[in-house]
Length: 320
Image (cartoon, rainbow, N blue to C red):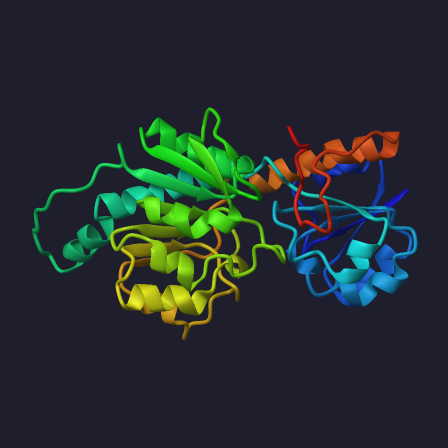
C-alpha cells in the first residue's frame, strides 16, 4: 500500500504511519501527480487545495482521503464528490479550542477590552462599568460538536443558550431549543451574541444575509468561527458601518488571507483574526494521531471514523 501526504514538509509524528504504509510527500502539482498515481490513501493538508483537481485523472487507485481540517469545503470538487473515494475529516480535534476562542471574543466585547487597549495606547484613564455574560442570550448556528462545545461553554458562564440546525427540534442538555435554518432570522432577533459555527455547503452559502443582520438587536454581537462563505459579507459590512448591530468578531472570510484593502480591517467595533480559532498548540500532532488511527482501520478493513457525506459537506449524525 502507498500513501501520499500533501505537505511542505512531513507532518509531526507521521513516522507512526510508516510501519503501515509507504509514505511519499508532495507540495507541487508534479510531485503530487507522481505520488498519487500509486496511492491508495491521501492525507490532505491545505496545500492540496489547488493541486488535487489538476492531478485527479491520475488517482486511479485512490480509495480514501483524510482531511487535516474539520471543514472540507476547500477539498471537495465535483469529480471527487461523484467518486467512490471516502473522505474523512478532523472532527473532534478543534472543538474545545474554538469554544475557548469564542468565550474570549465574547469577553472582549462584554468587558470593553478594545476600548481598554485603545485607552492604554493613549495613556487615558477612563473608568466605565462592564457587561456580564451571565444572563446574556447566546445563539449558536451549527449544532455539531464545535457548536455544542460553544454552547456548553456559554452554559458554564450561565448564559441562555439556543441553537440553529438543519431542522427544528426540541432542546437538550446544552441548547434550550434548536430552530431550523429557515428560522435563523427569528432566532437571531432573540440573541445578544450570535455565533456562526456552520460549515460551508451549498445549503449554508450566505445564510447570514441582510434579513438576519436586520433582525438582530442593535446591541447584539456577531461572531464567525465557521466559514466565510456562510456570510453575505456586503450585508455584514453595511450593518457594521451603519452600527445596526453592536459589533462583530470574524476569524474566517470568503477570501483568505484577508486582503490588506478589505473594509473589515477598519470597521467600527470589529475584531479581525487570521483563521486561528482552532489552532491550539499541539493541533498538528493531534490531527496526525487521528490519521494514524484511521490508517490502522483502513489497513485492517475496518470502518473509518469521521466519514464525510460528500454531498452534504460534513459528517452527518444518524437521525435520533
